Length: 57
Image: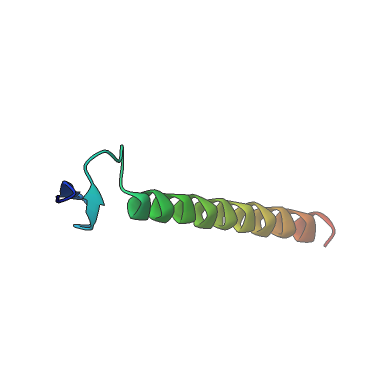
């Protein structure tokens, strides 16, 4: 009795055939979304801080 496993197209990890998508890639995409949100927030804060600094000089 062998479990049918396929390789993920993106990362090559072996996953069960009944999985809809690779859990490893799903985790990586979630981490990328968090990083992107943090970079956007820092950019907005930097532009806002620059604007406030120029406004009050």
